[in-house]
Amino acid sequence: MKTRLTTRFDLRYPIVSAPMAGAAGGALATAVTHAGGFGFIGGGYSDPDWIAAEFANAGNAAVGCGFITWKLAEGPGGGVPLVASVLKRKPRALFFSFGDFAPFMPLAKDAGVPVMAQVQTVAQARQAADMGADVIVAQGGEAGGHGATRGTMSLVPEVVDAVGARAIILAAGGIADGRGLAAALMLGADGVLIGSRLWASAEALVPQGFHAAAVTASGDDTARTSLPDIARGLDWPAPYTIRTLRSDWVKRFEEVEGGPATPDARSAYAAAMAAGDAANAAAIVGEAVGLIRDIRPAGQIVEEIGQTAQGLLTAAAKGNE
Ligand SMILES: Cc1cc2nc3c(=O)[nH]c(=O)nc-3n(C[C@H](O)[C@H](O)[C@H](O)COP(=O)(O)O)c2cc1C
Image (cartoon, rainbow, N blue to C red; front, side, top):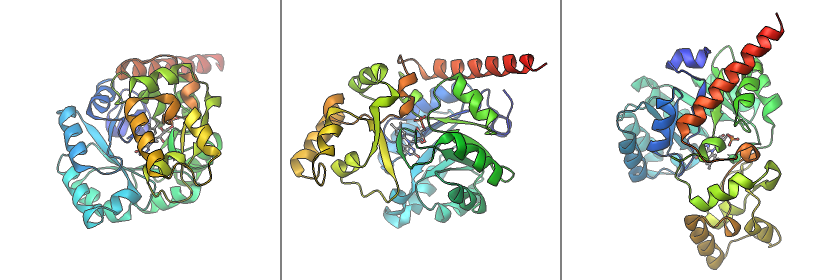
């Protein structure tokens, strides 16, 4: 499959794995890269030791590293020392989401490392292009994890029209099979960023209980909420909320004023998240969960999505002959 993304990074498939905080370690990133996609380590909330350990797990594989930008900027030295230390590992790219990445751009440029920026609006896409992002990811609200409200279907082509001449464009949010990849390419994207489907892989750092809940869930069973962030004491800026399974825990705290803010509620949530207790936690996954029926090695998932999309696009082209 040939797109501007595959040409730029020498990929077999135009598939990038999302830098999912905590879930996307070196093993997942490596598996995606080895299958001909582009794998990312999820640097998330900027724990330098975790990031170092996951780069070690990735060995010599060409993988990138993602950051939650507002959290990064709150760290020592405004996050600059951490980004500089990651750049020394020669990542395949850096990935910034949820905040202003301007302070980090010169570091990446000086190191010759490409930058991917995830956005939720057309206005943000223009800003990212102005700042020199090499790849812009247009993320719809269907996505698992943090995001905003626009839907993938119209956001992607609008971003393509607005800044596609200045950057490579990826679609994100709700893409979990070959149909989704083919559709994203038809919308004008150069590839896709996949989170939820690869969260449901053998290599993802996800407790078994969450995987078990995901394979039986429908996309109807998710919600965008702030409850997990309240329970974790994370001060996420507006307009971002997090999409998770709408578990019994979510339903219970939807009724509680102030949410799970007490010390007891917080520690119970942390314990349930660590144990993979799906009913008493909030497994972080998107609407695409309804397309996930098994947990498989990530390489197989990438291969199948790529091959299916290729087949669909070839069949469609033949139909038009
Ligand atoms: C478990 C999980 C954790 C995530 N963590 C992050 C993160 O730390 N940084 C980030 O930029 N995006 C994160 N995301 C969002 C992804 O980057 C991506 O936009 C999303 O997964 C795409 O939609 P999909 O889940 O439908 O594939 C996360 C998504 C999931 C499912």
